[in-house]
Length: 105
View 1 (cartoon, helix red, strand yellow):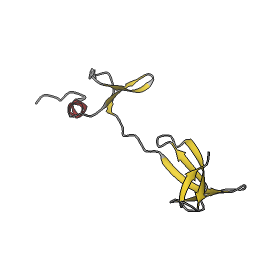
View 2 (view 1 turned 90 degrees about the horizontal axis):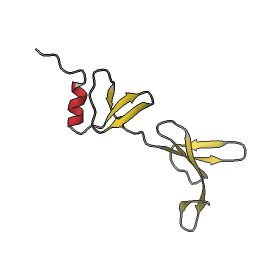
View 3 (view 1 turned 120 degrees about the vertical axis):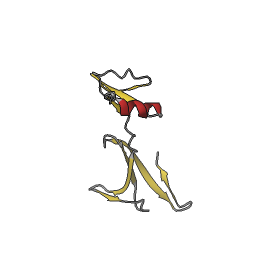
């Protein structure tokens, strides 16, 4: 029986529509038409992780985190899903007239 190509499983996944990346000195790089060289490393492009949004009640001394939006929350923090780094912070205010949270500019 003939030995399958080193990248046979990835080649089949690519033929079925998977996005492929090749490892370079700069890191993983997306390629639309891989060369499938034996000396190269390939992988299926990982799914992006969604950003994480948390709300909390911030005071002058500390912040209290909740699992869901609480009407007392006044801060919305958005963290990068891949790195966990803070991407955005929004100050929220409760408007009793229309009963929704609004971004304060």
